[in-house]
Image 1 (cartoon, one colour):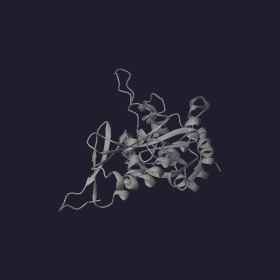
Image 2 (tube, one colour; image 1 turned 135 degrees about the vertical axis):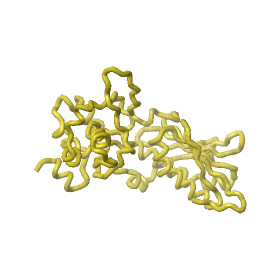
Image 3 (spheres, one colour; image 1 turned 180 degrees about the vertical axis):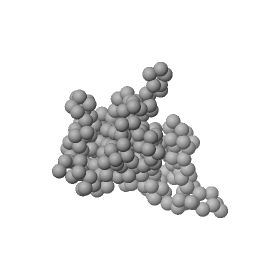
Image 4 (tube, helix red, strand yellow; image 1 turned 45 degrees about the vertical axis):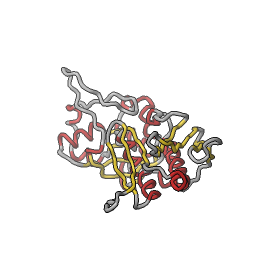
Length: 281
């Protein structure tokens, strides 16, 4: 039995099994000289899911006679779809050969199959091998951290897999509390592209732990009129909605209300609920 049939039956697979599956689909000269393997191997395990095509980053069709806007790819690839090649994929092939995606909806293998499903077959969803989230796994692992000597209530340091993580509770000129964090003193370390994905989740988990353990005391003593958290990029916004927003909302309690301001720098902010209003969350 081919690895394709084995992992389809099991619904979950290791990175090695997914890489064997990808190798079966493509000859050696289409495997990226080790680059594609590294992309696949950055996640330890995958599971088979039905994924909305609208949630994926599917490259546009290539045109020889037009200048095109190429979407930024976090993996450094320049991608486009050959419609003639995509047209060779039948409904059976799309159904029996799930695509492989990363944690942020970028397709590691199967751009043409995804494009064919959306544009030629009129599908809304597609079968995809998706990294199994490690948030619950790392959430139970405590990270040692310490307060800054001069800012014992508002700055905390942790080391995660050799990376220096700082979590800040800063006050703006209006008195609002701004929760931020840095990795190796960088607020935006290139979307963590060079950091192993497991380490990324452990970094976020450490930040989550510090907020959970330190924010309640800060709120009791400092009593800021507003709390804010920012995120850059759609994938980061989605991740923060899962990891940080529910946590801060729970800590603040029902007397605080969450609002969002979309933009290049997405703003989550909490303010006390006004009198005679109820908190919908």
